[in-house]
Image 1 (cartoon, one colour):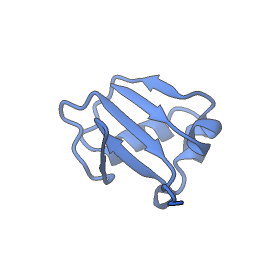
Image 2: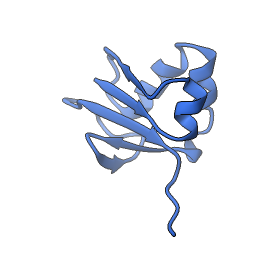
Image 3: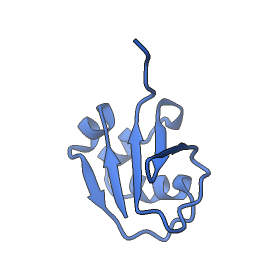
Image 4: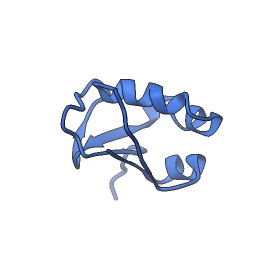
Length: 81
């Protein structure tokens, strides 16, 4: 599955995308796997309240299932203007 990072999440991790083979069944489990990769991932995912997530381009929450997902994207909350 492709994991995409946007804005400051991308800056902290150092690149815009990873392709991962994951055994995670939810987004939260995927985050735990990513946190275990390197310190930069742990820093980027330190505060989940500061992040939003989309699975296959649909906004969702961190307890969303990943079965059949092709893409997960992480980004800060959007602001209006």
